[in-house]
Length: 340
Image 1 (tube, rainbow, N blue to C red):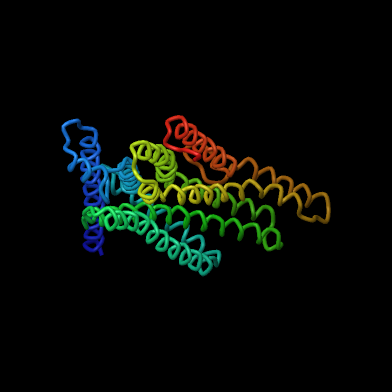
Image 2 (tube, rainbow, N blue to C red):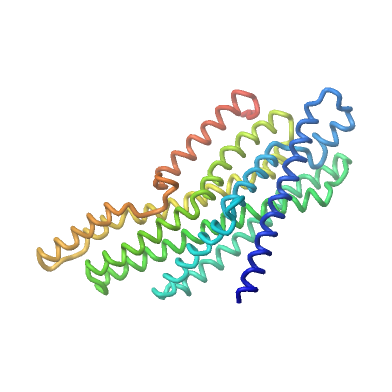
């Protein structure tokens, strides 16, 4: 058992570092292409091949590569790979164990299968969104077809980001199932207020540990939204086609859903005190118990946190509003976006 465990850790570490090195190589190559596009000594043919061909060097690709590297670092780290992966494994295992104990495993498996199918579908859409415009330009403008290395690198890049989003959504759905199970047990009279408090301590601690495990990946995905939007404006300002830029930046339309899913979990936690106060009681003593439970839930501050910031629906709405306002203002001021 020990030999197998060490072998799995070795393979996992080799896979992690191979992906990091591949993304770093692609990032350096993309930065080199972008720098050559602004070189005054570049011939017209070379400029067309690097900057205006079927697969031009885009700032969006550079930002996506950086975001994928940050996601991998958040999952496996650089110098503390064993500690980071052990924390992720323990957090996922504790969620799975709790769902099994409460009889939620069948529902979670069904939800996870749906999330996995959506992940596969979105990955195919992202790859085709980058491949089809490039293939169309290659056929209509008589430029060289993109190399298979570029296609493979983009497919791996999109896969990393989509799988990271899948794990975020899957974890949030497990948290929602736990909340629904706890509230159903309380409202159905299966547990008393004291038992509900005892169970809630474990649920709150489980959510806090889950937040600490996935907060770095969440922050990387959130920052990627702003960075991709700004880099897309830069590419449009450089004269790249809208279909090429949107095909590469299509991930920006998916990531807000990941943020919204986590925010919905926190919102469900915040609504529990008001739900408890609406329970029908038979005497004043029972009413005092429910009021004490509602106060206890309010003070527990359960939900999804990024460091000390509670991720609520209002927080995500403000973040997306200011990000879109910033990108829109810069786009119209620089001429990258035009109404006509």
